[in-house]
Length: 404
Image 1 (spheres, rainbow, N blue to C red):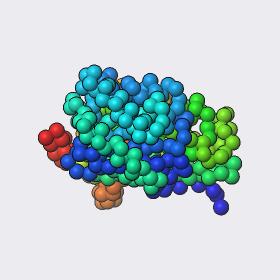
Image 2 (image 1 turned 135 degrees about the horizontal axis):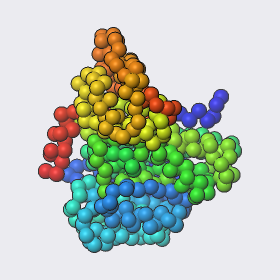
Image 3 (image 1 turned 45 degrees about the vertical axis):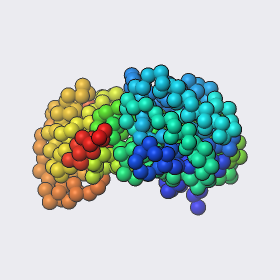
């Protein structure tokens, strides 16, 4: 029996031993949980990545500084209010959230992180937060990971939580994750909050390197609407409680851990895209036969961000001209006489021109919930994959009503 088949499971941040979480309603939102607390029994090695938006929320700037120390033990997260563009008061409020959580957990405030998500430009309702954080601490549970996943949701329609289990040195190891994200999502640290936890014993520099490699093929390769948030962040905690020999070089154990982390990250990214605002389909876009890796990424992202492509998929229309125009406008090199386009694994264009295909089979293929788009640029051997969703009437409805 292969003990490292890396099957994705329906776990969460409390699947690895030594972590507890809670999710409660603190009244920032009208209904549903809106305050999450996640804590390890002991300090953890930490790796983190953040939005590249030039107007970052205070929590991002605070957490960036704290992440430099490479250690953390807990994070407090609210939904319903992004605490972004709130001036100096925003920094004061974010730091107070940290201090309140640290006091309740009886740990050093330097080991506590904070994340906010929701409407931009509104002051934090700190009176509600002050009352709620003690309740969050009281509710901490080894079974509370799913509650925390509910509490960080904004326009999400369902919580996102998975885990993966494997063995290192005969010890049971796992990585768990929760994430939120549904709209305002674009590559370069896609709009989301994601918390990952593991009991693997691994040195911090390697943890950071593994996270970056995993993010590069997952969270940095998804888009819902081409918009980038002020509050994007991902954190990976490692408490080392599995008892494996500490990973200090890129050996077999590191590769197993990295493979598991990548697989979990891709699954989480797909869950975010599948729950895109108003989405009905998960679209996997692959740009291949490119002259460079950069060209492949540029082309795949251009296709995935094209409203024309996304609406075509929603309408079950294999309009390959929209693929070509997106690639041609992206700046990627494409051979006009040698490109290939496929919808749902069915070729619709070859050698730069239309090709005949069975329209009945195509219609059936486009009825499915998951659609593949392939664009062969005909200029090289590089490829890249981006995850996106269709663009529907409901996306407009959700965002027209979001603030009100």
